Length: 131
Length: 314
Image (tube, rainbow over all chains, first blue to last red; front, top):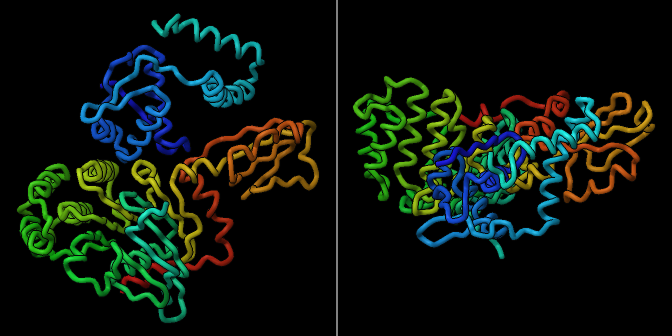
């Protein structure tokens, strides 16, 4: 089972953190179409959190088309794990960038250099998320 | 669509002799299947409210119901659907844990002996040991074991994690998660001052302050409606008389204004930067920070009265 990690006191709702990590693993290629996610019970046990939180995360992921829940079999990553609109994706990415932007300012980095570093990091991950 | 409330209080009040108002006009509703965490400072009235719910204390006003009945008068067949872990373990000290399990199995028709033994192993408790010889932490774990093994529909716990070390608290969280993962839905109400545990398991949070419920909502609503905001104005001063609507507390330092705000919707802050011609950052707050910001020391310097809860134990 892939390692999932949450930080309950971060102020970001826990179900949201679970969703983000599933998407992160999909983006990074560690989870591929057809892969089965841990069961709700396994995931709740491993993360030491309320199972209804996992249910909520999985429901939202299913709603967004990232996973498919097959009754009695579990939750699976879908073929087209990116049916979200461009605008939704951008909103989410912007949310992540807001914190980075604040850090860049605090550290005295200009917008240009901060954008450059982001581009370098994307480059390091390589095309298609492979190392 | 109305959600069925399994644990419910309606205008519940308790005034102790000497006119100490421990609980006043408390409205609480815990939906079926929810895990509801009740937080509040010492003396906020949590224990008194829970004791009235359990039918151990008569209210001076209002009603308290669990599974649709007042437990003060409910029949045993009704009461056995509810487990309670009190702050002081009132188990019979001379019995061994095994004997206590046997005793409880006679009182609770859904008693699950296999589960009790599994929990004893998980908690590191010896079944043959006299409860009176156990440490405080072990006795608390024993009480939690007894409550869970009764396989109740409703589990009510008053400060279950108090006095437990971090490892034991994790065991408690895991036992609870395991119990909640079962086939039969379970509704849980617990009070705590250990907020990090609550963030792992609670889906609803109620905040009590001086006998009143000041906030009761799904945890994520509370998290998303409370933010720390920082506004950095151009120039070297925050404009004279600047006030941000919804700000709970604020401070200014040169051109920087920081505050904790309660938002009605996320979009409250849209365009704020442009309107003020300033740089706006928002930061999420963990529950502990939210609690301290809303009920921190400043709120209490003048009229906070100590420990009305202490009186309720008599």
